[in-house]
Length: 290
Image 1 (tube, helix red, strand yellow):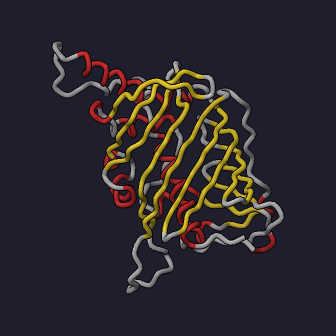
Image 2 (cartoon, rainbow, N blue to C red):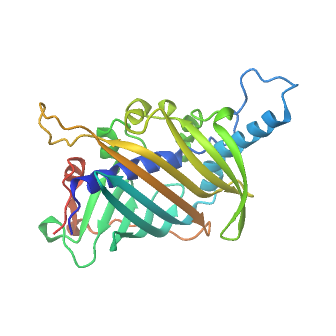
Image 3 (cartoon, one colour):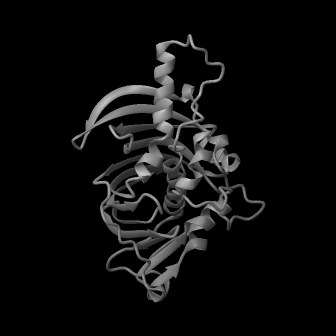
């Protein structure tokens, strides 16, 4: 199996960007959801909008209180006339960010784990360099090189910083919908990317605002999150200084769904002797398995 440059870069960018977005849904108490210049005579529609903002900003913390959940993810990445599709299912530790999943990428099955912000992948029957069955990518190093800072993705303690990026004018209630037997409220949300940690660099990749849709259940927890955006992947680190290479433009569509809150999660790193570190190759856009 070979991940060509577009695929490797896209998957890494998606992993980092997706984690940032997931972490940015709440601040716990919604105390910053007050509208500037609000008065006692504000209209009921404005009050409803503010209530929706409060619920959206509190969503991640309320979801994290469940500690864990089953998750499915569907992703489409398109660039340079090529489309990569993937479907995944597994379990996620909502407090630590660890996960165990099985992915199907272009009809290829991949076993995946995320442990302590390190991504591990194994393709059954195939080997990484050195004959190792597993590869790993350090997501913190990827984030640092892409200018997103050395942050602990999914850490509830950092969600207040993300919540500042959402104001009442950025939240619109769409309606209600049933998802997997649960009643949900559907919202459209616009995130001010510049206010996210590492926002200056992130805005160069995804633009000034990040539109997304979320569905919250009756307990205020995330049941579905949908993101569609264009991402400028960084130029390969191996490109020559005088190279005319420009960032790849990736179109990314991601839908994540959560269910079975409180399910057991056993995420463990593979034995070190079975793992090939491919972080540098992934950043250079040359990740491959033989």
